[in-house]
Structure formats: structure tokens, C-alpha cells
Image (tube, rainbow, N blue to C red; front, top):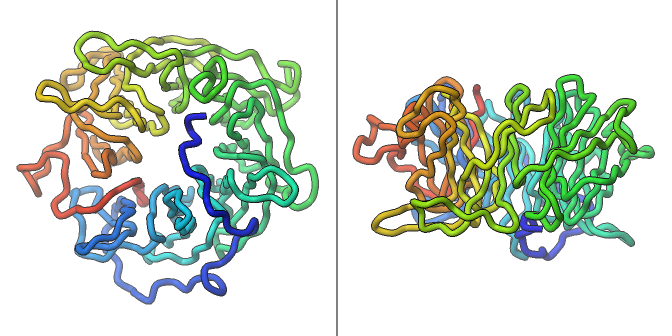
Length: 441
């Protein structure tokens, strides 16, 4: 499965262990940025001019304040904001035997790590309960005595302590419903979904396995949590056919197990739902040829579905290739789609990387992009973070370890009056960046 790109780790014991001898004390520093609307930006390298950590950026003025980064492990990367915006959960790990595999719980008000703990392996997915009380962490390589590796751990956000653990072999990705009563777990090389009931963890019958999918990787729930729309990666992840499939969580009309017939799509490794519209993107297998105008030999495809009828409304929309795992809808109807390990081109006539911008507007041209058109910005590298700025017409994109700021009224790098010679950049923002999240809106 192409998502399993990480190396096998020198594994820590199966249960989570505290760094040192217990919960870590908060930072002794009381200095904060004083910024009202902040973006957190993870930097995973230390150098002579700076340390790895979480940089703070003013998301209104695109300025980095003169303040030290928040220390959050050796190589901080992926972040998830709690629904109440009080904390940011950060994972640090680099896939080597020296990886610290640290999960940090950052207090957003004090801009300091409140607690940290060590996971028994890498994680690529963790979700927070709707009441912001717990974080659920998928650790696919965590050792389990007498069984295949793979666990989902439960961490209390108020203390950083481990409150539960459930065995789910090779579980790599998690999706949580709106009430927090159900979590779906998706495992490597599996055509089943683990339905996890958090309230039963540590008691009995916490996990029910439901079959008949095709390398599922994600799910999206209806507002009443009665239905989940499961995204099947299919051939791109070692299966056969990419699709979207309805899983009924209440007494089912589809039999068996409430699993309805799949709706085939061209490729689907990542998806986003906006109202009743679902956008799914991926790279088809066998490869999709690119249209004229690029030196790239293979391309990805975007498909649009109407979830109210579970039908495809638009398909064959050409985007970059690679493994797509980042997607966000910015202002002005601009859909940003990011991938890694795509075809990169850097010549005198073409620059092309792993970012695609789709204009969802039905009748408005944005920059040079017509309605329903796609722009591949002239920037190379993997895309590891996308964050629309809610109060502005800009989107922060981490690509090729740098932060680029796009103006989604023109689908181009924004003009920054703080540094007019470098559009889309922030002065003195130096590092190898991985993820970006706004924490105040």
C-alpha cells in the first residue's frame, strides 16, 4: 500500500511511556507572542541559526514575531487542533530507529507544551473527541504480545495520561463521528473497517470489524451520524477499484452489515466534503496520461460526487500525480489539493510540483483559471500542509519544506508588503517546515 512509506522502527514497549519519570512540567518561560490570530508552523530541523519546534506566525499580517519556537520533540510535524481550540496536538517522529515518536500537547494560551509522552511507533493519524477531552492515536507498528502489531491509544487531554488502548492490527488512519461515539479505523492492506466504540474500550466488544470495502482510507459522517461515506483507495493502495461506499451506522437497509454498493471513481486517496458535495482525488492505476502542455507523463484525477444521491457529477478533472493526502477548500471557491512523491519538473520552460488548485466556482474565472479549471502552480516539492486563513482570501501551503502564501482571488502567490521582492513569503522565516494550522479562528 503506497501509504505505508515509513520504515520499520526500533519499537518501544507496547504501552506508552512517559518521557523521563512522569508528566513533563510546562515550560518555565512565561513569554507569549501576544498575537490575536496565530498560525502554528512546525519546523523539523535544528541548525546553527535556529531550533526545531513550532514557529508562531501572525496570520493577519504574515509576520513572524521575535519569539523562540515552542519545543515539541526532535522533529515536530503533523498537528491537530482540538475543537475548543485550547490545545494543539503535535507528533514528532522521523521514521528511523532514533525517532523520538513524541506526542506533545500544546497549551495554546500559554504557547507551551503542557504534557508530552512517547508512542510505541510512528503515527500518521490522530483524532480528537468533539468535547476536546481525549485524543485517539493510531499506531500501526505498535507491538502486541501474541498478535499482529497495531493499536489505537486513548490519551486524556487534561493530563496527558493514557486512559485506554484497543488492538486494531496495522491501523493507520482514523475517522471520528460528530458525537464521538464511533471511530472508524482503517488498516494497511485491508478491505475491512474497524468500528470502535470508545465507551467500551477496556470493558468488552470495543471493536467490530465490518467487511466488503476496497482498501478503505477515510470516512465522512452525516450530521446525525447515521451514515458514513467511506473512501476506498482501491488499486492505488493495492486493491482493485477506487470508490465511495455508504456504511449505515443504524439499522441498515443495505445488507449485509449496512454496507451499500460502491460508487466507482477514477482514484481516491483523499477527500473533502462541503455540504452535500464530495471531492475525491488520487492517482489512477494504471496511470492516467497527461494532456498536452506538460512534460509530465502521468497525472492524477479529481472526481466530484453529490452525496444526497451518491452519484458522480463531474469526473476526469486532471491534477498532479503522486499520493494525494492533503486537501482544503479556501475562500472564493478554490480547492487546494496536495500530494507527495509526484512527478516534479524544473526546466527553463516548466516548473511543476505536487500542488493543484481547482476552481469550483461555476461561472467565475479566478486569475487565469476558468470555472472548473485547474492550475498547477510553478513550485516543486511535496505538499505537507494546507491551511486556509478564515478571515482572509489567502491559503498557507507548506511545499518543499517552505511556507508559501497564495491569494485565492488570483490563484497566485500573494503580494506581501513586508517583503515586496518575495511574493508569498515571510521575512526571516527559515527552517524545514512540515505542517501549518491556525489556532484562533
